[in-house]
Image (cartoon, rainbow, N blue to C red):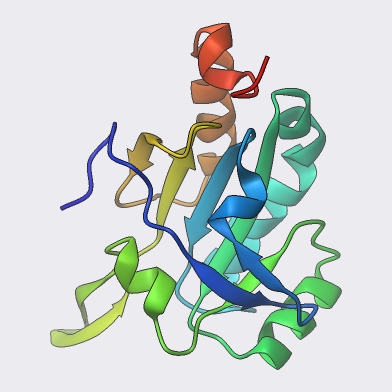
Length: 163
């Protein structure tokens, strides 16, 4: 079970634009890695738009945003274009990143149980360690909650690892 203070699991996945994205790409920055069940659905769209609109505030705190779901590259590309998202979306159809971050768990819907992606978010610090985990996200106001956590952190937690 991942917990705050642990080293973030390393990952590599293909982003919506076809390039390979890895945890190492964000060394020295804060990374907000959020997992969502399905591109172009109402909750996932709402959450992604919140992050899109707040991105300049995150960048001011040395933070980058990356979304991840089990969708195909094509679905992620379409999602990004439809809502003018301004950060990478990882296509993790094999659930390697999703499972490394324990975001794929048993869920239930109308009395039926199934294995699915649980909406969750990880703040990974510039040193590669997990600073905060939101294990079961409620969409409304989530980006603001994540931003508030970064703003409340002492300066060294937000600053680049190499000063």
